[in-house]
Image 1: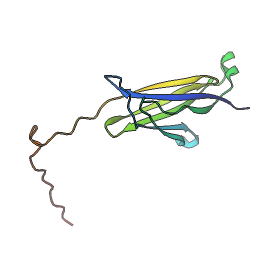
Image 2: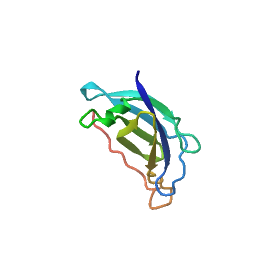
Image 3: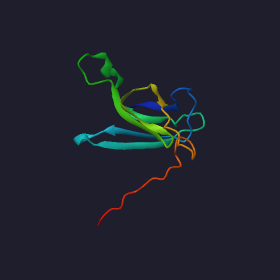
Image 4: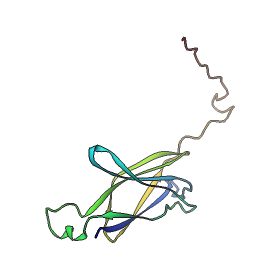
Length: 131
């Protein structure tokens, strides 16, 4: 019987640790040929939490014998939000029977400059493209 563990992602601002609502949490795992299998796409709630996901893991008894396979499953988490830089976590370890909580601190993108501030009202010249 396949064993499972669980994963929960908590997303917040990097400096103030305020929760970020509406961030996309994309969960995948590596497969053969260097490709990835998409497992889940979630959204964070008003507390910055994504729904807990149950994931397959190796048998926990593997940790009892040295030299065996890793006693955890490795997953990749990508978190994105339109107002923040993208965050990627590769090799997130999930163990059998344990809930893993991955904290994700997103850094805000620079704020758009308003007209009148720092010359933002200067026109942008687009050069013509010769066909």
